[in-house]
Image 1: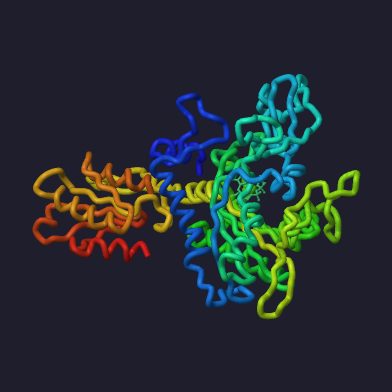
Image 2 (image 1 turned 90 degrees about the vertical axis):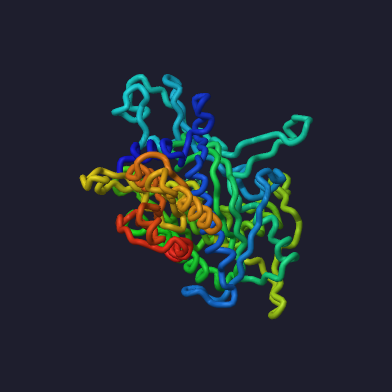
Length: 482
Ligand code: ATP
């Protein structure tokens, strides 16, 4: 698939726009247009529903060690700066950057091998005789801001680079305010910010993006089994929504890629069309994090290089970054056992998922026009659950009472699903526009409707058409969408 065609469709049909475009845009920031906002909302809602609200805590799902509970949170973007000191982001959340003193280019050191020299795109940075690359230097990815009117460094705060920490610091609040028992998960969807050195590949690497994260708390003895469960469950979720086939893969990290407190990390990856053949980009990471996070917020920042984990100390032997001092252990009210739960973290990006679904949906085929001649058509084959618009309603012509009937059908459908009404232009062109928007069904009111009270329903992918009674339109569409 040609990425340029998708990017152009996204702009033309209102899926994605560059942020602040009329001022030349801002690198790494994207806006979702009228169709894009529905698509992304549907993806986030499918995630929330499938992971949280429709989860059956009374049953043991296939592959899970036991039943479990799920609940949610919505935390702030700006948090107490100590959160980021204890989590390790303040010290460790950096990429290495390389600058060229000659052309002022800037790259992530680990991306140099895929980058182009601005002076000679056939070469990599550093390969041209004029290149003057600096040594790799650390660059913290957190956006800094100031809270309050004083404007001093003491008031510095950060935009969160991940939603996870809000969950850890609320662990006790959730335990105290609900009746959840371990094992249970807390889910959150929200914006995160990273001052990426080289945002690129459309929305894949943005500076402002949304994450869909779960922190799943379990007993240390069962954590390995829970890790396996979440790794498989999350992979299946993408396939259920249409990312099937060999473009999607689950990749286990090599043991030497893991921090020693983690017994496993796996990435769910998609072969995005902008990547070289055979390369995959991360959609979601599933990590076994042990008790690293809860202990860090309790005791102070742990040194990830110690084994067993110990609090990192300064030259006076004091914790480098003090924890909250709050007791974040869990007491099992049945067994009486007290322990710090282990954490399994499935961490997904809503924008990367949206981009993968857009890439997967983009299809070109041929369809007959009104005269039966085959014409090229572009369609977005979204799974009906995530399609921005579920059904479009057209009167064949703008007369003979057809618009009145079509509007009534449209209003009835609108009570149940996102529907679209269109009476402008040739009906063939109206179908094409809905194909590009990814609308699974179109309903057309025509001359026969006025005689036998039936309409034509058309399927986006197969182009099959069939007739349905006007009064049955809502049941027909809602039934098929399920
Ligand atoms: P990468 O290696 O691609 O920078 P990461 O391993 O740092 O990603 P995580 O910290 O594991 O990513 O974040 C979890 C998820 O958040 C990622 O799988 C991705 O879907 C999303 N994400 C992370 N960074 C970005 C970004 N800059 N733009 C869009 N989504 C992102």
